[in-house]
Length: 74
Image 1 (cartoon, rainbow, N blue to C red):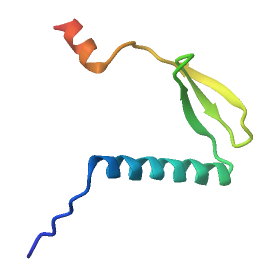
Image 2 (cartoon, rainbow, N blue to C red; image 1 turned 45 degrees about the vertical axis):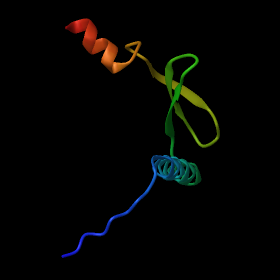
Image 3 (cartoon, one colour; image 1 turned 135 degrees about the vertical axis):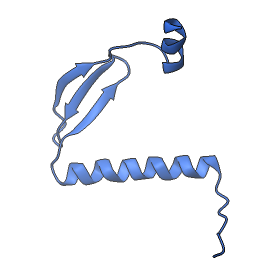
Image 4 (cartoon, rainbow, N blue to C red; image 1 turned 180 degrees about the vertical axis):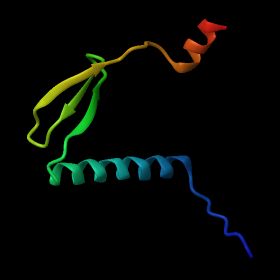
């Protein structure tokens, strides 16, 4: 069986992933389902309902990048 080769750039993959996330968030909003949102400024995690109200459900536990935490343990 012949395998097809698809040449797609990283930028195209990123655009498609962002579009998929945007569509899923719009779908949840239309279905009146809450979504989980991370606020980078406050570093807190919220559950946001379709009417825009937010309820804090957590906060960031670790700071820095994963590679930086791993280096600290070694």
